[in-house]
Amino acid sequence: MTTARTPDPPWAAPLAGAGLALLATLQLADSAFPAGLYAFSHGLETAVQEGHVRTAAELEGFLCAWLGWQVGPGDAVIVAAAHRATASHDLQCLLAIDTRCLATKLPREAREASQKAGRRLLATAVLLAEAPTRPPTGGTSSDGRVTPFPAPTSPAAVLQAYGESVAAGAAPGTHAAAFGAAGAALGLPAGAAILAELHSAATTCLGAGLRLLRVDHQQTQGILRRLAPRLVEIAGAAEHADWQHLRPTAPAAEILQMRHEGAHVRLFMS
Image (cartoon, rainbow, N blue to C red):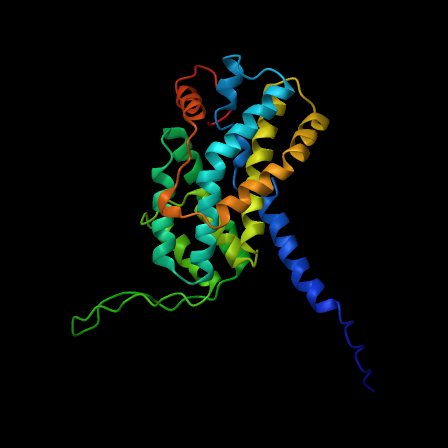
């Protein structure tokens, strides 16, 4: 005897779709995601050592300026562009976006940090997206004709092909480009992916502040909450910005990041 299955309530399907996207957003932005972001201070360590940041209020000012002038007009725009390219199955555009992202990072440590975190993110995100195995690509037939690489036909396949390009040294694998591509492959809306990147950047910097300054978790959570409207504003500006005209302009932050390279004692990698 079989029992008829009770039909799902009318709200179940919409909730499931939105719920899956929300869970993917939370997972990608989680500090426990194995990208290694906790190892970077983005110049905050030098700012503390040189006396520019000493209090919770100064930490908030540093974070607001860094997000508004460097992350927002730079990495956030790249996340949006990489998301669009991946969602439209345009691998070549994604590779160009990735290369442009690296070119905007003047300090050596910033470039290295972005690539290390991006490669780690890709290694896990490709598995989570569960892209179908691609057929053998490239090669030369017996009559000398070159077999072209088939174009990816889904966001997950684009992410997989991008990961292969990074592993082969054909793309730098910056964190922002990897984050945007992973977001598209995991079903995040573009706006959610940008906000997740900004939230991740903010919590990384605040986490560094906890280890460098006499501030506590309540203070850093207060900072994060007060900055929420600013993060939404930055995300809105980045979503439709032109990635070919990036304009991250934060010379003070870049100088601090460059000075960090020559510090005698370093707790963080950047």
